[in-house]
Image 1 (cartoon, protein in one colour):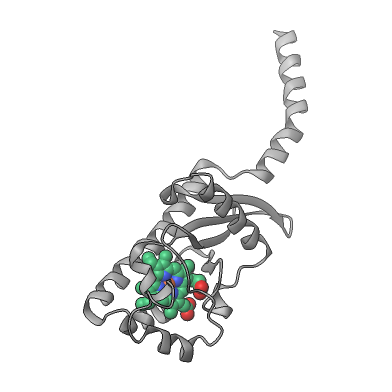
Image 2 (cartoon, rainbow, N blue to C red; image 1 turned 90 degrees about the vertical axis):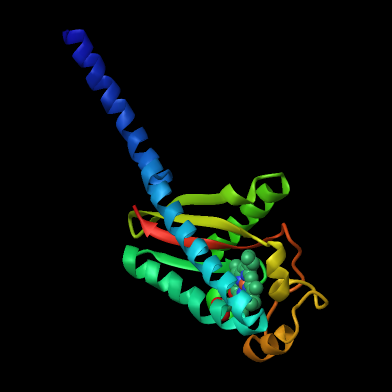
Length: 195
Ligand code: HEC
């Protein structure tokens, strides 16, 4: 008995630093799942609005959905959760909102490599826990892979739907987000949240 408790005490003492290090580098399955669910909600809501508008207004008439409604959905979810939520691009259309920071850039590179080695787009994600101001923060990125219907606004010059190129020139003079092919990594939903 005495031996067991001494052994236990010894084990606990030696594993404590391990536990602390572990807490700093990984998120719990629950935290990860909750984060994943919010990114999925963003993508689902946006995709619903975009599909609806594409049917009713065509591609050129749907640019406002991506310009105004996409950031609104992200902001709404950010308000609800208290987390930072946005979309970033591998090549960027909205320079202010879509340009990846250093961590996001790294995440996109990981996602791209995984995609090229055969990862399924639906489940492709990358995350890391980073200490920020002494607190563990989860940085999470969910891959956004180009689909066929996206080429109307993100494809080659020949694939862009009528009127889209002209509108993009006016609204996004520095646009780099054309020339994508279906299956390529277009960007990611990125979330930063305290744990
Ligand atoms: C109707 C035209 C249109 C369609 C269709 C469209 N997009 Fe976009 N996309 C835009 C516009 C406009 C922006 C810039 C939004 C903004 O101002 O934040 C954008 C921005 C993005 C961004 C954010 C990064 C950036 O470059 O600013 C991603 C990621 C993205 N689109 C992915 C997709 C994917 C994936 C599809 C297909 C499922 C798609 N888009 C379909 C017009 C479109």
